[in-house]
Image 1: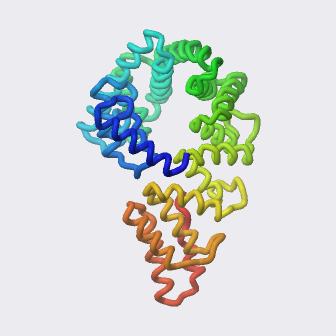
Image 2: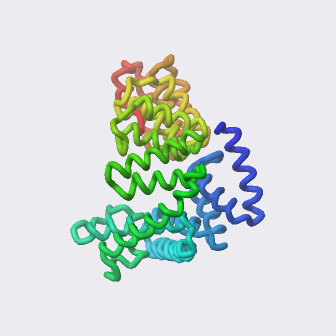
Length: 352
């Protein structure tokens, strides 16, 4: 999706959301959180999640709870996170019991997280544990000893089985969302080679029909060799590119990183890396802006341009990038001292 189209969609969503439409409020919150068609803004995302959550939107309640769990640790944030996750769980359960396959799937995912945390709870109690997992587990009463790992595992499997049965008919009739959800259940939660193959097939069906999230998932699978027969970089780039061209932020980021040589999958192609970093930077991403500065400073695939590099580093600093200040100091120091630029510029590295 072109940037203009994303911006237009954002404007349309905002107009309806501000008039009280609950689904548009949720969609707008996602756009703010992910930087789709607008600069990423966690505060605005939480504002619109809250609007939808207060109207009973279970996904908004759940995502709002997760956002609270990522804020600086204090009693207020923890209480808000647990409150909204528990409220979401009640909403998911009511819908799931009425046969809503998506709600059944969300319950399966949440119980699966609690199961994994429960299995490791007695051996790993570090403060550095994933905050999302700890918050969900706390909301479900894991640490109070109300439920054990076996219970969470059985509940997860039960809801996933129900969701699979619910999605299968819609997926067979061409419903892209159902195909994507089936792919996720088979690949991420059921385990075993046979289920992984089924999952990839459903992702493939949805991706070929243009579902951007399915395209991204296939890109990830082929780039890592996860759930597919073998790692295939060409296939990974193909699916990442299709998703990136529709404006998928993470796909654009993965392409930029891959072409910049982050994971040694290919010989770096800095012209392509610059292309995707520019697209990401258009949405105000400071990390992308910094990496554009690195390309200019080192002359990677383009003519070396210290003036443009300085502009990029300064802009990245304004956008909160923590590496840009040091990079700018190194660059300015080397120019002022007429030093051998190469030796100093070697210290300026990509931020992946």
